[in-house]
Image (cartoon, rainbow over all chains, first blue to last red; front, side, top):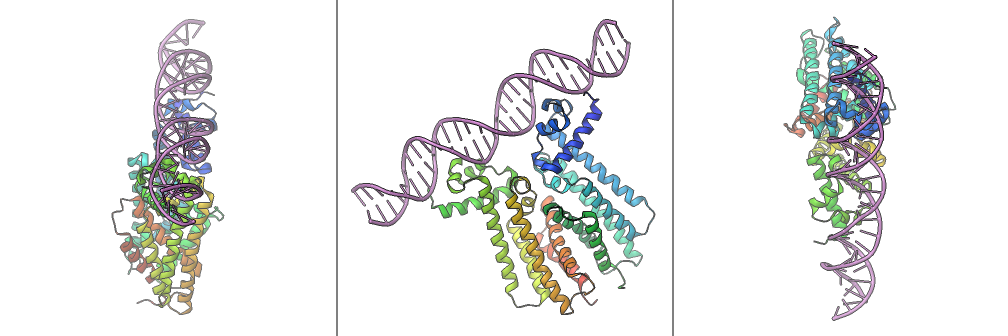
Length: 198
Length: 198
DNA sequence: TATATATGTAATTACTCACTCACTTATCAA
DNA sequence: TTGATAAGTGAGTGAGTAATTACATATATA
């Protein structure tokens, strides 16, 4: 079935992510993508000049999703602790919705083929840490979080929590609920960071 | 130059790890390994029946290194907190000595091609978490660490710390001292976990 | 309706990869 | 010194894989 280029491009990006989840990012061949969509392999090159360009489009799609989720998490008018919760919940939600994401960060296509893209993703992680740091700082100002910890260090500990849980989830058999376990551990870490002991 | 099989095998394993660091685990082809050593590609198959077996040997090499480092860290007769420090310091040291390790965890070889390899590494991470949990438990028993936190949760937070810092190091330009930064953050987390506030 | 163009196909190319096999030669023990 | 054997070679094979090309046709628009 013939489709306008825009929709076909979007379809290809979606299928690449789904395939990356099912068989791993580095097994996503142009042939596999084409078969999954129902077109010939050559048709892909009508929409993307190279396979690297295709991966770049995928990465941009993911980056936009993350940025949107962060913005949405910060849009609510809560206190800093709840904003921290929302940010990290959004991160877990994005990873759960795009399970290939952790592997994608280390995939050959993204790291080896496209250095620019690697910088983009590294920038995303840094940006996320920055957002966390801002909320942590606000929490410290408000006397909600311990003040005897460097703001940035607390942010690093929180991003590490996300990455650690995501790794355990991805490397294991995905045999637990990422979001549930992640948010549970977040509460533990938040209790450690809290200004007052209950 | 002809070498006895044992030494050649060891050489191959070493070169694979070095190449994995330099060009990425999934770019390590049998041809690249052979050229780096100075033999023909066919010679590799004199020592390993398949490429998967070669990777398994690499994994065992890494596993032995980690196990030895852990044992060494636990051999000293310190208190639980110092043992935690020693364990995590050993982990950072091993990662720094084998910089391909973080990437290896996300390689296609491990995640897609070689299920046995994946099981090996997943087992290693689980074992490490177990060792940490034991020391955390001892620290809680001794009244050195907060008792109102699940022992296992604290262990997860500590392994996450290691992984988070290692990822930031590997994905970035390796532009900071892994061990130094890691141990610094460990002290922060230990302060959060401490039973008494100073 | 006619036609230009965007979308898609079939067939093929150039290349990489893991792996095989018949053959050679260095090494070492008898 | 000689013969057995372990270690290495040269020349392949078959199975992918991205990308190209000449050709076809659906679709929108004038």
